[in-house]
Length: 359
Image 1 (tube, rainbow, N blue to C red):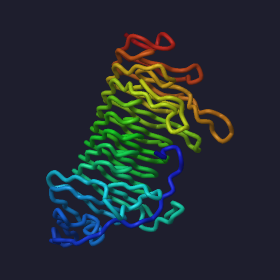
Image 2 (cartoon, one colour):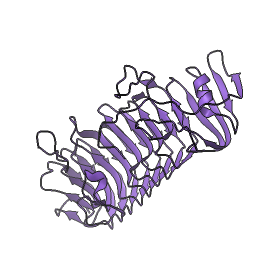
Image 3 (cartoon, rainbow, N blue to C red):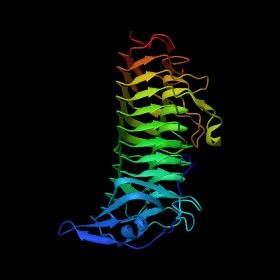
């Protein structure tokens, strides 16, 4: 779990094996077919930009590293990835293994690169028991869809320092960090939509990112549902739209989370130092707790100091046309340091301070 530190990736190989079949789909691209017992990594290594790697139904024990532009990896039927028994491919930390690790081809051990890996699509896989399910770093237009990521110890699906990321129709559960994560992306232009995220530490975490749309997701049973976090890095968090989500009963407790934050728990949509965001048309119910982050929609000052000792406040946000009920300590919570924010047209019963509900 490393969402509060700059990620330093370690270049490493993944498993390789034999490619069973290659057939052209057009003059410019090919489809590489992987059967049970074959290696997905071998097919990826043999592919050219624009190719598709089609994986037939079965269980594959391997970690796959992707550094080629324009690849599509598609599950055909029920395809499960589990960690390899030996020869595990490291992704970005020694001994840290992702099912799919999407990183630039010229990445060096310090984490620097000169060119992003572009237009990688991953769709339809079931991923169980890795450190990360899908991990992207330094990507452009990475798309992850219809992935089921279960019991991965850090992240379900994650994008660090990405541009144009799309996460859609994924299901993430059992991550000790975030089920869905977008971080270190000051010009993210990311879309997180129609996903389900439950029983993770954090359902959806947007950290140190700008220009993200989070819409039509279902998030429940986490410590916090949707978390917009500014931390100690320059640029903060902001310009995020959170709309048309269902966020309910995120009432687990994560004690002293990561050693950087106090106890997390009982929070629906939480802004900690995030600014210039729009929170609208969400259904937020039954998020209850007694931590600093508890309540339905919560706007508070970040607890992580900037290098100069200052703290980012959650200000200049629009909270409008949300429906809230059954949240404690209140449906809407904001601290004294965080105005000005605009609260209008929210249907709720309680707020701290009073007067933030329209009905």
